[in-house]
Length: 278
Ligand SMILES: N[C@@H](CCC(=O)N[C@@H](CS)C(=O)NCC(=O)O)C(=O)O
Image 1 (spheres, protein in one colour):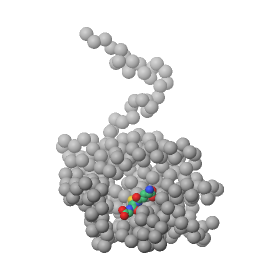
Image 2: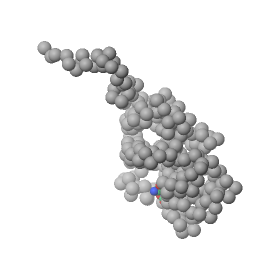
Image 3: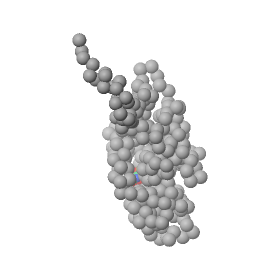
Image 4: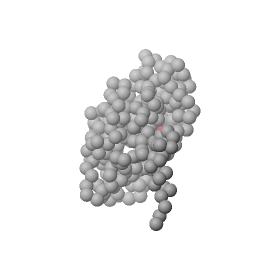
């Protein structure tokens, strides 16, 4: 049992003091969801191996009453297995499967394109002593100079935002991805938005984005865990002439979102698709 109801978490921070890693953000929320207090071990990108006594090169890592647990997903499994009487992060195996599917879509659709659009910001916000390491590793990772990759991002941001439509559709009808209460799916995806907020020095989402209420709702949980003062404003993206719509105002008018209540509800559609061409 966690001593003093507290779990130690090794953080991955930037110079503002905010957490940068989406994995660490998701883990902070996971620990809070279980009702534990967080004892944060500060630090940036370099020196992780030394800070953790040689146990890991990647974060998050937690220590629960002397027991080390690595890996964000491993930590969630550990927390639910060890503390099944506290609110479950993954209340059913289906949540694990759906969260993995959502995460596998979200990274290439949004996190990757945002990374390419904010990679120099990412480096610039890091601690001075981390900048050389972050520059060299991220240039290999992304295959180019950070400044060159980031260039022209204003031409890309509306399209990246538009790709988030599946989240908007789901959250139009539910307060959380977990339904009426948050679960690990919310924290996992929120990790990506908070990663963005830790580094993006220009907004990436429209001020009236339908995702905003959910983002603010989740950020406000557990005493405002997602409202660290070092985070940048992510809302305020302006649509310029020629940019695609940053979100679809007409979304959700067909398929699963159009309830079939009998022939009257489909009459117009039937008429349109059966109309004879002259
Ligand atoms: N599978 C791991 C991935 C963790 C990971 O890649 N963490 C990154 C931060 S997002 C890290 O520690 N990077 C350190 C580095 O780049 O040196 C998990 O889910 O915890």
